[in-house]
Structure formats: C-alpha cells, structure tokens
Length: 346
Ligand code: AMP
Ligand code: TRP
Image 1 (tube, protein in one colour):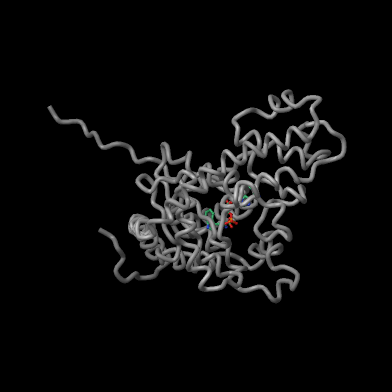
Image 2 (cartoon, helix red, strand yellow; image 1 turned 90 degrees about the vertical axis):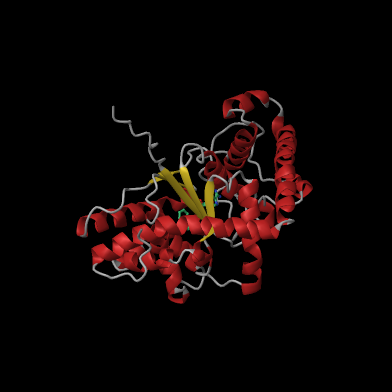
C-alpha cells in the first residue's frame, strides 16, 4: 500500500515593519501594531523587520540611528515577538527590498504616488518641493517589503491603510501586466486600537513627531513619568466617563487604552466609573499603565545586557528572510525580462 504524504500544509504568512526613528516605541505603536505582531505568530509564519531604509527618508543622525537597532530588537522581543518562531531582521540586510522597490516604482504613476496623504503630512512645513525623493518613493518600498513575502496579513495601525491599498493595486497591476505573482495582502487593523490619540491633543494621533512629549507614552519611559502623563491627560468638559469620540475624544482615548490593557470592555468600564468623575478614572488607569510598562521596561533592559545575542537574532532572521525574498525577486526579474546574477534558486 502506498504511504500517504504527511507533509504539513504551509502556514499563511504575516509580515510587518516598524521604523527605528526613536529610542522608544510608544503606546500607539504597541496597541496599534506590535501587540498584533505577537498574537499573529500563532498559526502564521511571521516576518517582522526594523525599517531602517525607510527611516532615511528624513534626516537621521548616523550615530543615533546605529545605536537604535538593538534597542528596537529588544523592544520587539519584550512586546512578545518570539525570535524562535518569527524571523526578525533589519530591512537593509535583505537587499531584495530595495531591488523590488525599484521595479515597483517603475509601475507606479507619479499621480498615484502623489495622492499618498502621509507624503503630504510628512513633507512638513517646507512643502513637497523640499521633501526627499525617498520620502516620495516610501510607499513603493513598503509595497516591496510586503510583496516579497507574499503574506496574507499585514498588522499595522490605521495610518498605514492607504499604503496597503497602494500595495494591493501594485500587486494586481503586476499580476495583470506580467503573470500572477503576488497574492493580495490584507491589512490587519484593529477597529478598537488602530488609532491611539495624543494625550494632550486627543484629535491628533499619538506620534513621535508631536510637539509635546506630554502627549505620548513611551514604552521605555520611567513608569512614574507615564503615570503622571495619564493623570494630566486632557479630558473633556463634563464629568461623565463615557465613550463618545466626537464629543469626548480625550476620555474615549483613555477608555480605549484602559480597555485594551486591562481586558475589561468599554461598557464595563463606563459602568464601573458611573458617577465617579474623571479623577478616580485617571488614577486607576495610571496604575494599570504602571503595571504594564514596569515589566516591559525591565525585560527590555535585561535583553539589552546581551547585545551579542540580539545581533545574532537579527542575523539569523535576515538569513531566513532572504531565502524567501530571494525566490520572489527571481520570479519578478524573470517576469519583467531581467536576468538575475546568483538568483538564490535551489
Ligand atoms: P512607525 O513608528 O510609523 O513605523 O509605526 C509603526 C507601527 O505603529 C505602524 O503599524 C503604525 O501604523 C503604528 N502606529 C503608529 N502610531 C500609531 C497610533 N497613534 N495609533 C495606532 N497605531 C499607530
Ligand atoms: N510604513 C510603516 C510605518 O511607518 C513601516 C513599514 C515599512 C511597514 N514597511 C512596512 C509596515 C511593511 C508594514 C509592512 O509605520
């Protein structure tokens, strides 16, 4: 009797990236994206990278940038990314990202790249005339990051949705113009935490480029500093703890953070604080935040004691990533009529 094949079906893939533009990730990064990076490791083959090439689209201090890679890696692990299960790497260590990026730029129209709202936002006060060409080409590099791995899901925050749409358009265009090469990746964006707002300016997203540090909770802040930021967060007129993003953006943002860290639902929290006012609510949330950031911070510092291990993790991750990326790039080169030297095909 012929033996039945027992090869397990390949797991669907998941991929995401984060820029090394600050010494510490913040609550928006964690709740909007990183927490999902960790949970999606179950049942998926995961590729997670530090988007160092993307960070060059705006000026960076080389010394500062170089120091950040291990700090980012440590924070990813402290967020729950498990290097034994997921490939964790630096984008620039897999040159296929830049190579596919170029091919995708060549099938993107100037007009559609110009429609990317993040380009407009990030070109800043000096306007697009002074922005780098790299900043303009950023979404096509991001599309390459994604399509190289043919992932099913891309866990990101709401601000990346438009880039994901462009990625899908480019994948479809490539498939149509040449040959079916890329499955269409799906954004994995949580409705509840896809956009975390600034504590001092709760209609703007929490962002490293915010004008005041008081509005941002950095994951590596001293816990007492984070507690103070919560207690001084802007709340709205009235005194009722109620989820209403239109009328009460400040309180609603705090409810989102409270709910996602404690596992209690928003209606449960509304009930628990009925008739108690903002003071109690913020005091309790400050405690929840301290309980969360304290172990995160010590775990990160502990991991940073062994820099050699973090570097080894990134090196192993890039070898795993290159295996997949190289195969995809060879397919792409073949389809567009280029010849690849040392294609990495088996
Ligand atoms: P970045 O720091 O821009 O590389 O962002 C890393 C990840 O965090 C991306 O998936 C972003 O969409 C996500 N992110 C950044 N800021 C926020 C925010 N305020 N709320 C939710 N997600 C965010
Ligand atoms: N553009 C993303 C951000 O700023 C980071 C990023 C780069 C990314 N390449 C990616 C996210 C690929 C998901 C997939 O947040």
